[in-house]
Image 1: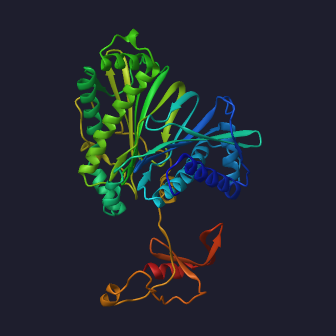
Image 2 (image 1 turned 180 degrees about the vertical axis):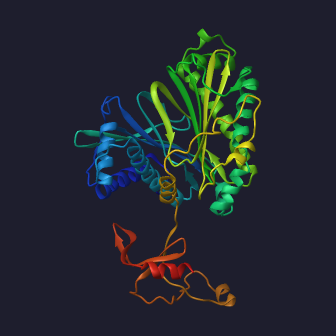
Image 3 (image 1 turned 90 degrees about the vertical axis):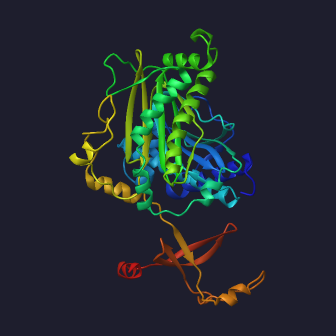
Length: 453
């Protein structure tokens, strides 16, 4: 990607998604100039990954539930009868497409990061991805099924500096710094303060949803964290309260609200400020963290779930007879200690009651959680062409055009390392004007253990 243009974005997405479907799913996609409005039907899923840094925005993949099941079956080689598997596969597909686009951006000098994928699913919802940039839509057809990819992203001058200057932290260091932030207290205090200062509303933190509360047509504002901190923040209100909030913010009467966009802008602003307050605490703790532009989801039947987030909390607030639902989750690398009785007693208290998460059972067997964690650990793959040793005087004498001789002999296999551990050997190949590595030999378990030692 030489320049960040709509054409470059389309080329990156088209190439990645076509190759992924052919190689991983054995499916062929046909690029469509236009896709019918009702092509996906009512029951559908949307996978979203957000960009932060020198490029801000979001990439979303839209599919019908039926097609998502077919994709999952092809990828796993089994019948797709588990919704969790379907969400995981769509999340992985979205992550691949967004990850390749991010790589192209970084190669073009745009330092950026991507968030953990989130999934929106249901039968009645519409997504306004971000006001940061116009939506660029790409359509595809596979048999009788359609797939849509939306990209709404733009360059953000200077926003990648923090990422470029951030120190390399280990997973343990990141966890320690994240744990030093009282996320629960930060969210509760921020929601109460923002509603009071911006909307003149004294909201109250409550322990459970009132029995008379009915979830109807609603608006959800979403921002995500990326960088050393990977997570998501949602704020959800029913539309009647969203209109009341908008009127209060704009100093108008409720019946004077003329457009849905006015409501969306207010929810965006609130989610951006509250999420931004939490981001500031992460930065103060020494973590590199960027915040995505807020997106809006509206409808009657949908839910938003962030994949691979190990720590999530739901916070409830009330104002008069209205209920505000807030969700915040942060992904943590490495094994997590289960909270025992002593830990729960030491959890930060709030005048309205104990944390919503206290006393909840852990979802799923421990082995499954550990496996999910292991499968989602990011690894760095390195191909080593060769090594040599030089004296400082020799290094200082290097200039443009100098040739550095390596100990690796021409034609010998190159070493393939994961996190600096030798795992395979291969040879350099050139395909489609791009260099790649063909794996020739997988190192035995004994050799791998020896290399670790």
